[in-house]
Image (tube, rainbow, N blue to C red):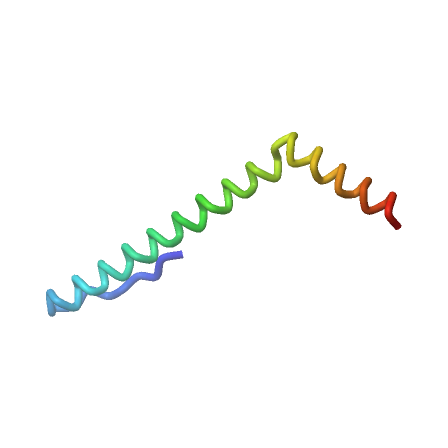
Length: 62
């Protein structure tokens, strides 16, 4: 969530606020992209097969 910043009469302060908001937006987008790609990896059939094989392997060795 991006917090609102009051506009100042000082243009330099406004520029700083805009840059800070842009950095927050960028980092949020990166976090969303990473989350989506991780979710896609975990939803792939090959990953599910690997998980099942791992469970079977640990059950056999116990």
